[in-house]
Image (tube, rainbow, N blue to C red):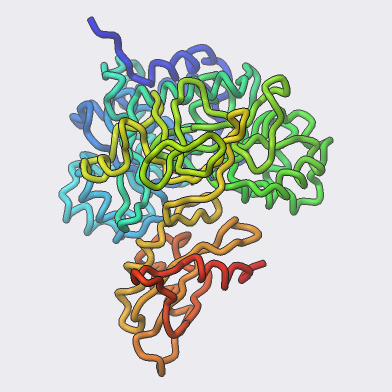
Length: 509
Ligand code: AMP
């Protein structure tokens, strides 16, 4: 008989070891113990069974963050269904594409949006609609009470897809990265070990749970350890300052740290129980690292990874394994193979700057229903990350840039092409180039440089931005629109975004 490789079994060990302990605490939600979490996941898995959700069925989820949302995610794993979390900011137009692409059996929505989404649900004939609201209470929780709190974990192979995470692409349309049960297991076990997860760790969880950082990295480690989370519906620097004395770990994007630095009460005394501050999803500036070390008495541990691969590199936890060096993302995680390649895909001499390619048990199975794209982004079994790195003589990696056209704003990824396609549809605009510009709070800000279709007309910046927000999630909308007569192009006709970035680089600084 083959063994069951369902990743939920690994998490269940942690859950079972902590049944009498708190799982979710904090000011935003009712207390939830590990035994309550275990029961809820079994009940939700039984609900899925009653709806005839089989292994491999897609469950699309766009809800506010809540403990019930966590239980529902675990229930999907437990049932072998494929969990597809979506950014709560996605508009109806964006959802249309995700539904078309995944053909879900269930859509879980925020009841506040149900009316607005009714047309979409009918159009796509989605068999079941469930609701989870911002308080984590509501109709689904009531429904669950009717289901048994025992459930046999569904048998899956380690290669079977557990989660599809959508990442936008240079071609404009987001692509679904298929993460297997084996991927999730190997990456979370590796991080659990290298970050020395402790039995009494208390994590401040202030990240969204539709993204790899909050859903996998933060949540999985707490569940594997059966340790408690101070679970916040969103990042709020003042709230985190208040909770810090009760916590030991914080995971965040660089913006968390720049905002914490604005709090007068941040001090070594306040942080004395904290053992680990982790930063990732976007580059952490050396000045943030240094200022935070001075103000908190602790060095932030920067790590690097992506939706398609989970975490890849991490600065060391302990001094014996090396210093945490700002501006670097540390060393490769155990079992990761990697190489640094030139433009033609050839492996470069040690020390050269090139594209990072990776292979290992954490690397995804490809893009959902997109074999073409999958083929393009792999080379001899290595996934081409699109990040430009430099490897030091000791194997320490620094991310020095990206050869993919990507903007990371406040930890969220924005692919310019997707925005340009929407802007170029507007009658008043002939063409556009969307760039990322340094921003003191968001790291990078989205800026659209546009050429009007008629030079005599006036362009109303605010009107364009508000219009874009009806079609695109707000974080993707430009913070600024700049009007110019002509986009700079090279001899091949390609827009020279580097010139625009140089020209407008200090727009916000
Ligand atoms: P995502 O799939 O949303 O997690 O975004 C992944 C991308 O974020 C990576 O390919 C990098 O370009 C970027 N990224 C993640 N962590 C870091 C980091 N520590 N430093 C620089 N860039 C990062």
